[in-house]
Amino acid sequence: MKSLIKKLTAITGPSGYETNIRQVIRQEIEPIAAKNEWQIRVDALGNLIISTPPPKSDGAKIMLVAHMDEIGLMVTHVDDNGFARFTTIGGVRPLNCVGGHVRFLNGAAGVIGQENINQPNIAPTIEQMFIDLGFTSKTEMPIKVGDVAAFERPAIDLGKRMVAKAMDDRVGVAVMIEAMRRIKSTVNQIFFVFSAQEEVGVRGATTAAFGIEPDIGLAMDVTRTGDTPKGVKMEVWLGKGPAIKVRDSGMLADPRVVDIMVSTSNQLKIPYQMEVLESGGTDARAIQLSRAGVPAGCLSIPCRYIHSPSEMIDIDDVNHTLRLITALLQKPISF
Ligand code: CO
Ligand code: ZN
Image (cartoon, rainbow, N blue to C red; front, side, top):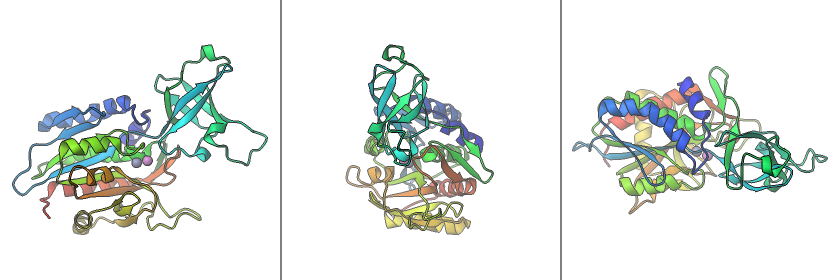
């Protein structure tokens, strides 16, 4: 699992530019799909969708989604001296930018610098920063307006915990791939959706849900924790198990979906936490509000320092999430 997470987090794939990460995921899942005769397709927004055969009489159509995109940067202006100005793709915080290494889709690399370096204790705004690619004139620059980049930083293995950029939501992607490997037989029809453009407003999941018309929607994404010094007041800890979402700022999870996750955890003696997140949302919101509405919920993997280039997860949480989701997908679900 660790090596898969490491492999997935290393790929550059900001929202709307998921080609590379989709390719890597596809290589992982193609043998699994082929063995089970599951269908694979990519929709117009770039969601990668794998579907199992239609449900048995006591089964349901379940849409499970993990987003493959990550936050990133887009070039807005390149000046005559070779400095690139940028805007953000998704929730990039200025505090996490200065000194950051970035990698463009075409392979070009750079570092983020700031204006006003005589005021080192004041965090710059996005407008006061620039990407320095090591060139001295506009004509030499290997990038242009509209090109996109993401943070780059090697993953580190801390034993029980692991740190990488884009853990949001490549850790969810890793869990979904492993769940696909483990599923033997199920009464349900499962649509595994590796979604695009989550970080810019759950756009991929919106069209995927419309196309699939599921009976139940489930997202797997990261959630923040309240366990760091003077952290937010939040009852989620790293290492205390998957967090079953009750609400976030975009969704009130369907209580029946919450109950299924709670009862399955209890049956399997999997540790879990209840999550109330006061800011942030997931693809589950898009599913819940699609067409005439869908019962939806979210299983969250606790993560520290979300939307920084150093997002931390606990490997026990990952394994417990995997066990829970694998069991849940295989049991008959009816409301
Ligand atoms: Co995110
Ligand atoms: Zn996410």
